[in-house]
Image 1 (cartoon, rainbow, N blue to C red):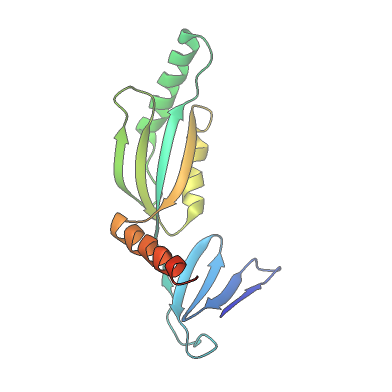
Image 2 (cartoon, rainbow, N blue to C red):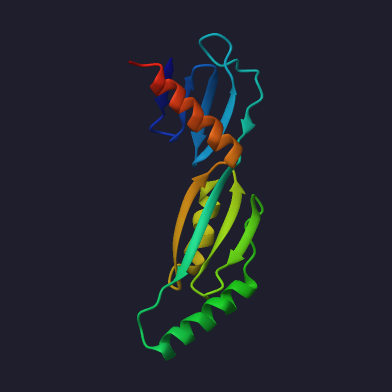
Length: 152
């Protein structure tokens, strides 16, 4: 059973989905076990960190000289940049063709992801996607196959 409530004053989304309660506020996901039909107010809520794959490619299209000026400025900004305290960079690699790269990051606050991309948006095009460890991905994919095979 799934229930969801949205408080339009605070922007807080709360609800429960079969065995778990959740609350989303400022795009931070938290979860806790559910006692029966409703969450126990004494339960300590655990903040869930999510992983994201963030790819970037340089925004080009001007002359070579203009692109070089943009690249120089982007590298100058990057040399001063630090990730927000709630964000952990698990892997940070650049493509050998100099056309961008990939970072695997973990955070409980998606606003920190946007804070990072906004600083470099004039120079790079970003794609950010939530990801799972492959063992979890395979397990869930197999559950999906089992579900589909169980329905005739």
